[in-house]
Amino acid sequence: MTPEGTRLRLDAATLLAPRTLAVLLPTSLVTSVLTRAPDDLQSTLGWVGVNLASLAVTGLWVVVLLVLLADGPRRLGLRPEVGLPLAVTVGASVGLTKGLSTSLFGWTAGLLDDPFAPAELTRAVSATLQGALLLPSIGLVAAGLGRLRAEYRRLVQERARRTLLAGGGAQGEHDARIVRFVAEARARIDAAVDPTVVTVLEELVEQRLRPLTRRLWGGGDVATDFTLRSLLRAALHVDALPAVPVAVGFGVVDLLFRGGDVPVGTSLVASGAKAAAVLAVFVVAGRLRPRDRRFDLAHLLGTLTVTAVLIVLLEGALVRPNPSELTLSVGVVLALVTLAGFTLLASAVRVALRTRVAVRAELERLLAGDVDEAAEVVSRRLRDREVADRLHSGLQNRLIAAARRIDASGGAPDVVRGEVAAVGRMLDTVVAELDAPEGDAHVRLTELVDRWAGFVDVDVDVDDALAVLPAAERDGVVRAVTEAVNNAVRHGRAERVVVRAHVSAGAVELEAVDDGLGPVDRPPGLGSRLFDTLTGGGWTLTARPDGGSRLRLPLRPG
Image 1 (cartoon, rainbow, N blue to C red):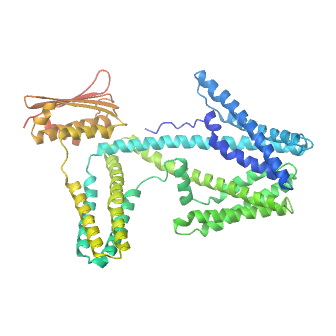
Image 2 (cartoon, rainbow, N blue to C red; image 1 turned 45 degrees about the vertical axis):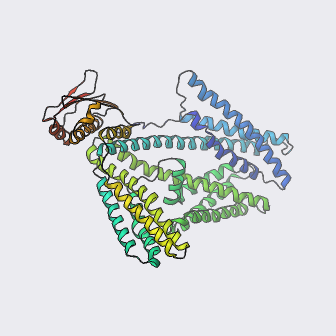
Image 3 (cartoon, rainbow, N blue to C red; image 1 turned 180 degrees about the vertical axis):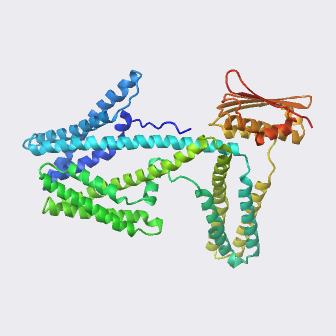
């Protein structure tokens, strides 16, 4: 069985999303002004105004396209999907609208003598090619990320289902870790004299608690959940300088964005030289990347700044000699923004592709039916997270706060005694929570329903007379109900389970009905042995006429 939703769908809303246009249109504004090489501030502001007007017209055209491609098919009951040829056409129309309207508004403002001069027509063609290339590309990336987010959400759901199936076996190990830490903490604090308490607390956090928390929190997780924020964070720390894709992408875009007043040969040489410069700087910077990941952002910004300055110098040397200071400044900013966009996009795509392999492999393994073994692994991983959160938010932060208060007081004896006493009470509370007995049967059954909420609809109706049964029999009912629900989901893939337990003459009749696949032909497992123990072998599992299973458990009294 493989994950669903392998087809990549691109619709008008994704293709013409505000985020996409928010990236492309401002860049188009700056480059359109820069390629006309204005000589002074007045002409620069004039071209800025012209481009703002052309952006408004382009925005209106985007609204028209959304109505035609999204609202129209939806009202007719059709999918507003956009194939690649149509996506390229839509992108070209947006670019052409931007290019032609800029020339026309420039002519109207007196900045151009002829809006249909060869150079302006070449710019319009360049803008058309930009739209045809960039808009579908970004749209496809957005659609792909949407599909990957859906797969990741399904993986999280399957992980949670397996966690619920796995029971509490993994928790004991983690509780033991906390108990060992608490015992060591109490012993070290009790043995410390006042001046060394701060050191003891700091060592407990740095040498014991913080490493344990990090191991529990980070083990086995994928690099990203495919949201934009997590992708950028992963891209920054995992693969910050993808030299080849950034060099090629920047060279192509630089060639397309250059105006038609530059000879084709010169334009090709300049764009090729810039691409080579990007490649060289990125390769060198990659080898000089600092070991400490905290400096990744500074390293990336420094690399991009050096590259942007080099690119502007190459533009001045090969294409536009003697540029003004304004042109140089705008050029550096534009190159920096463009490089940053390409770098983060290429890194994010790499991270997404690598993570997709891991997500699909785990999802396929879970869906293939390796539930028992996978359940324990996933349960251990997610319970690790829960334990790590308890350690971090409770113990670790409290110890740090105590150390800071003692240090701020200069080791005042009353402050030391008060903080040590507070830490001791907290440690005792942690142990008491771990040793606390389980709640009564009704509470445990309510918790069972709550754990499945959002994944499976579980309805448990237990007779009030259950409360008068001996504790061992009540525990047997809870175990039977829990195993019945687990089996319905684990083996029958049920989405709804209804459990009824009726007490009569001291005996319990339990019935579980589900809407799953029905009884599965497989060797008896732990659940079967549990049911045999609870009923003396008198339980039945049958198929329902309308699908699913019916489990009957006559639990023996006493």
